[in-house]
Image 1 (cartoon, rainbow, N blue to C red):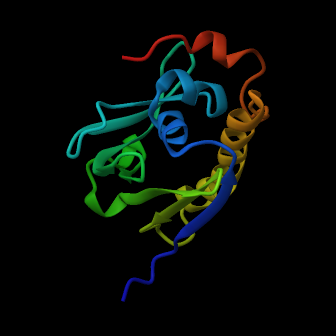
Image 2 (cartoon, rainbow, N blue to C red):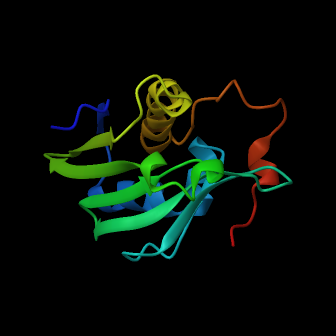
Length: 162
């Protein structure tokens, strides 16, 4: 039995499954609601990174693409770069996308978290804010401000992805 904590967040978004899929993977789009690029070729087994839209291009999360079923399901391994060499430090994030009569149900399930870890604390706060910003951007064209970022327009600094 796995007794590690997990975090599950469900949101209903007025969009299409393909638009939501693209919003999760397209670096030009993720910078608008997450102020990060999610960078990969998005093939199973490939590496991915969650890279800040700052001048330094700081990488906050690394992992591998574990499962791809466009536009229904994406599963990633997830760890801080400092823990990247420790297999026990990785958790998993699954994005499940389901069409529902003009809406899309997005379920984000983050599993394999260490109890009382900084990662658990960070994602427990971060996922609801980021996913609310994603929903707002898809439905209104305007992301919500992520107030913990440094002052200044992070989007202007985040113009390219490798």
